[in-house]
Length: 336
Ligand code: FAD
Image (cartoon, rainbow, N blue to C red):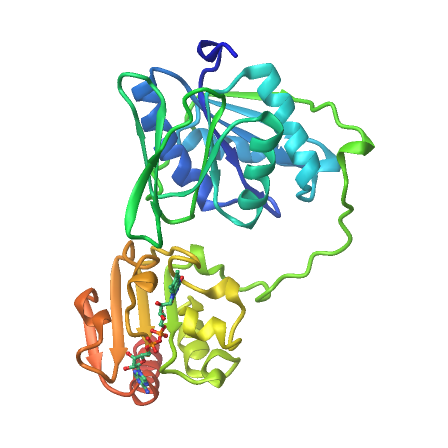
């Protein structure tokens, strides 16, 4: 493999029902920095059906080129077909780097592509850099239960690949109407490339705001009760009136009080909302790993020595079942 032939940093953009995921913009911001250091271009690959109008948004967030695979057969995510698209793209354009969101889709797609292309992939990176001498990407991620940060490189194979969770990096400011190239592509797909068939989409958690994209996250821990996470419960009520999403600690998801998709932390989701309310959560290091990018953390805990109070912006020592109804009442009054 002639490594010098491989150029460009590409974000595999993710869209769902015609809307790009924020993580694609966050990755373009990082991709641009990497590309500048490497002296290469940053671009995006966009796959789906009727998705071409989304390309301008990717240009606005920094892509210089957007390659669009718009095909009715690609309307719904399909592991093998999307992998084949990226294989075709790689054979034609020889990208140096792929950045992928560590979403459900990205976590499925990334390893499959890496396997087909016989290259390496670093999952759940928290930092991306460039080795100045070798001009390779340095993928940094926590290892050994979060006790060390490992720097991983992919020196002998291309493309270099990594996934990054939503909200690890800040979204850059967009430039409306930014110039760039939008290039129509066509993948060489046959029936054999679709090993599974889309039958029905069942949304877990309904059509509500996604926890990783919410401006307000109301999160409950073991100090709460199961009914607090259900419709009419105090966590749900507060989230609804603040236009936010409900989330939980692992102690809660392990007990089955709420779907694990709503778990925040090292083995859950990373969030960076404007406001994170932690009720009845002690503040274990594994939970904090998912919330420290929040603009403002409000903690409610009846133990004044709970570690969450070391990281919060506002702390309330008290029983969350007494405090939350007061907050709900106050917000309702404020909203009139
Ligand atoms: P607890 O630690 O039991 O805390 C409950 C808190 O509620 C206490 O501080 C208590 O004072 C308070 N409380 C009780 N009653 C009330 C009340 N009425 N009003 C107010 N406060 C009250 N955890 C995660 O959250 N996310 C992860 O992704 C995650 N990943 C992990 C990965 C690994 C490898 C390991 C080993 C652990 C992981 N954990 C994770 C678990 C983590 O270590 C903690 O066990 C967990 O976060 C504790 O959840 P908690 O704060 O809800 O429960």
